Structure formats: structure tokens, C-alpha cells
Image (cartoon, rainbow, N blue to C red; front, side, top):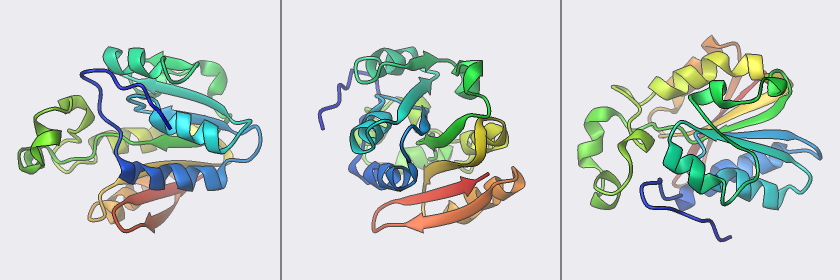
Length: 189
């Protein structure tokens, strides 16, 4: 797929295809999908291409990311997590698909130069343990998911048990899926 990527917007990585695959497996006809922390909108765009008939919405806090994502998707909103979404989606979302920042703040300095020197810090920095944004996403997910809906988050393999615990604390039933170079935690409502 071709995805428009603008300067100052996080460049999608191949490992995120595992997150997309997990979402596509769960996306039935007419599913309402939200690509939260969307960056370029690559996740939502890939899901829409692989699962025709889904209704994709996307949101990001960064104005540059929102402008870029609007080149890839029709329904993109700007704001902080769920505050960006139309209220009519509350309780109707089948899949919340999220690639939130999950790098611990102190670990950013040890990342490869192509990431630490060229990616926007807002797209990398997940706080002291890397889970700050994930905690916020999980806490409010049950209000936005329909019964049987799921939250899917890309995370680090070493972080997955803690992410699963965050999901459980929010009332979601967690499942961890591992691939060779990617990890996704899924929480079902």
C-alpha cells in the first residue's frame, strides 16, 4: 500500500502489520473501527483495504499527524484520545486499534538514530515505564467499545504482561499475541 507520510509525522513500521492482521481477523462486515493515536492513518487505511465494508475513524492529538492522516482516510479527528471522537461512536466501536507511544522515556536515547533523531518525540515517549498512554486508552475503552468489542494495542514484548494487567484492571479480558518482531495485547469487553 502507498501511505502519505509528511515531515514531522511518525513513519509507519512493518512490525505494525501484525497489529493490522489481528484487527482484520476480528473485523466483521460493517464493523466500526477506530485507529486511535493514528499518526499517518496507516493502520486504519490498511484495515479498510483488507476488510471492505468496515467504517474507519481515526484520531490523533498532533495537528501534523491529523493533516497527514486526512490524506489517507476520510474520517480523521484531532484531539486527545477519546475527546477527539464524535460522541455518536460511544458504545458502538467494534475495534479500537492503537499504536500509542510505548517507549520508556529513558530508553529513547538508546533507540536507533533513525527513530530517536527523526521521529516526533510525542509519537515515541510512553512515560517512565512506556505505559502512560496505554493506561489512559485502556481506562476509557469500555465506554467506547460495544459489548464483545476489543481494544488492540501494539506494545513491547517485555511490556506485554503489564499491558495485559492494565487491560484487566479496566475490566477487559486480556490476551497477548506474539510474532517474531511484534507484540499485540488484545482486551475484549
